[in-house]
Image 1 (spheres, one colour):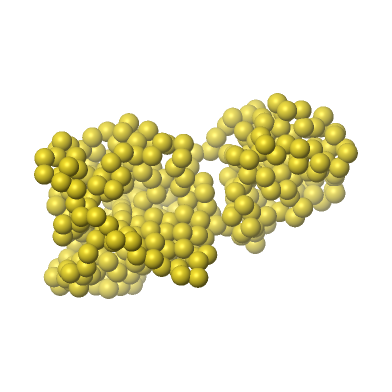
Image 2 (cartoon, one colour):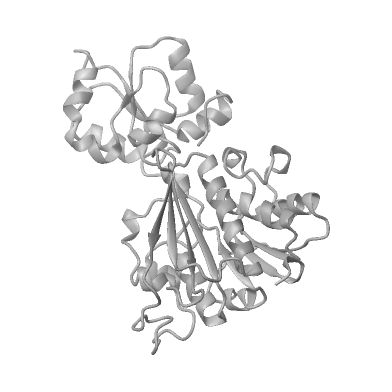
Length: 369
């Protein structure tokens, strides 16, 4: 197929979709659809390089379309400013030749898989988290669909997305480029003999790329099998027990008088007020960046590491403890754990908005990831 006569749908204009859409547009894809319901946020620009600061608040789908057309004005870009869901997914997907899953949540993965199977479209799926990424092509030349490998969704409490778990910005860029490459190979017939595989990327490994051979389509699969039991799109939020959008909501678990703003905490630092700063992010995130003198104990480990917190108070049980995380969500339950165990007679507060807010309001040079 001539790329100029091919149509591709990129679902998600975030870290994966950014590089993928740019390279597809630059390669000369004739018609490119971009789906995203969210708006541009400067805190995400380290990985969403298709956008820029001047477009803060603009629809990500529209911003991505502008960038693609700046590269290639001959590419027809269709903007879909919406949440992909059961009521609209099939109609949208049926209008394109190839579907690219550049999203960051489980519910949409199942939705796109099922709609692609029903519409007989190949699905190029990518994911990225922290320093790792994966790439798989589903529903293509006798290969499996997503449900063949993952018949049931994981428990919602075990699922982490980029906003919560963090990601080194270049990682989704790499995976997005690979998604564009595979979509181009499908469109031009370059990979027609390739067996189904999963490509695994690890930035922290001496062998950064590994290829895992996948089984073929499962005859008993409920979606693409010989006698499928799912013949139309379902309620994927209920099926997965999780949201169908990638955006992480701000949590409000403790009253505001038990919280401290970044500006107020900055005054604590300037005044050299004795205190303990507890960082409850995972170690891989802490190693990327941290505030000076902070003690790192991940939230999951905190109940078993309380003695370490007490020891860090250095015999001053009335010293205040401030708790920080990436976005001000995990720090709130950490405050409750410290309060319930009487760690200090001083105040225990979390820093509102976490290190992301710190970077936006106090120190613009503080790394974002």
